[in-house]
Image (cartoon, rainbow, N blue to C red; front, side, top):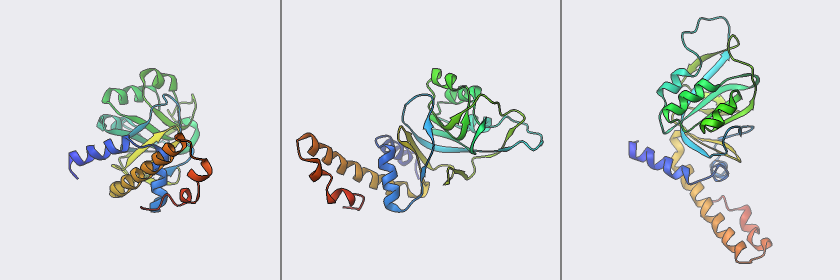
Amino acid sequence: MTQQSRADDLARLARLDCCAVSDALDALGISGLAQGLSAFSTQEKVTGRVITVQLCEDDGRASKRHLGTSAVDAAGPDDVIVVAHGGRLDVAGWGGILALGAKRQGVRGVVIHGACRDIDEAREMGLPVYASGTTARTARGRVIEQDWNVQVTIADVTVSPADLVIADGSGVAFIPSGRVEEVLERAEMIVRKEQLMADAVRSGKPLVEVMGADYETMLKKG
């Protein structure tokens, strides 16, 4: 895939919302919707290419780097950092200095399957953070980075580096890198159909007609 095609994919994704992408994933039989993640700093929609971080319990192994730092330093303006922490809410898997570094790198946003802290700092700097929850409890002495830029699991969804992600007020969804074109194409078709339905509602057509039998089959290609 060329750099231009990657840019085109990101531009197309940015014009969609999570619901349309979720419907497209459903229609194609792809598991990509990560349940239980919400926006905790800004309400800004986030779309981008995935860089992953895998966290684990601190078992006493010496760690030469703080969790997440390598991913942040490697990230750029097209990227979203995705932190796999098993949905843990008792300890943070992301914090304020990491958020500042991500903002410096131009990272589009952060998704954490687990808790984050220093959320007020992320809000002040305008960095979108989607997470399972928040806590003030530090990761120091409790959590370390197991690896980064590897395949991870986010709320039962398998996520790999270079997958695409979209996050907004309705949820968070991941698109496997090998299926981006078909997912985007299907989501765009769904948006077009929904726009026609919305136009019909605005024109005064009864909802029972607009959302009739055709609505239940709208995910089908056509």
